[in-house]
Image 1 (cartoon, rainbow, N blue to C red):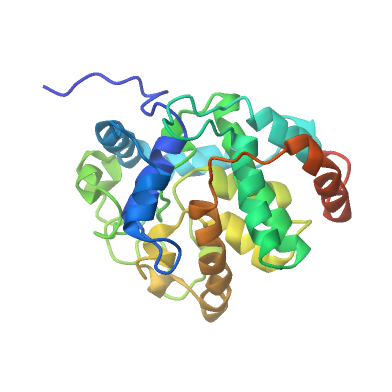
Image 2 (image 1 turned 135 degrees about the vertical axis):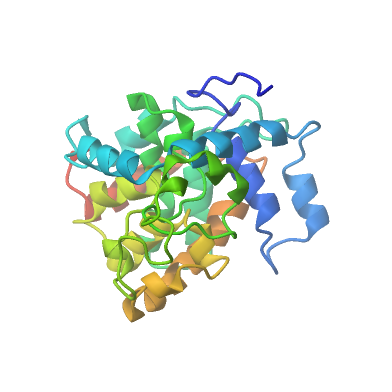
Length: 290
């Protein structure tokens, strides 16, 4: 008999799925497997928990669910605050289960952005690293984790077997919809990702929050950094246009900073705050709608 799980809290923390992603998608030339093991060392990895997270995600992320969430949230009428305030608001989500690093969400953002900054990338790239996970405030608006984090994938067309735990799609009502299980589904070949609905989560939400303020490469990084079936597995190319393919080089450039920037030494948020507030002011107004 299937065990009962609280659908609002299938993971011990938002970083359980990120740890799973690190192990699933090792990055060549970033650090060795041994170093990665030392870096994210769980005595008892919550693999069952992560599997349960994806079971819920793949069961409930239907085409109709995604369209309903787009309608509910993309009016951006939940809260108005500065980008730094949003990062501090997100900081209410602290990973209490990580045995190696007492890492808050704000520290993760700063470690990502500081790694990008150290490599001499443009300031908009640094800012993208700092804000890329702000969409996780959806959890603080009451959304369950399976509707906020995790690998994203197109809805309304056939599921790729390269999506993590594809067997769980058998529980999704869309798997019984003949139209949705055709290769193209409701889309046209080469329609471009801007016309494709991905499973609902923090990427798509934040993209709409910031789309009027940042360069297009930054927007691609934000919107598709969880779309692992495409940027890591090469799936769904038939839905992309040539512009998507060109822009995905930025998504691939961003990904290692997101996954491998964490370290036991937390950044000094107060010391870094003036730099980031100046950087934020260069690109954003004083208040942004969420």
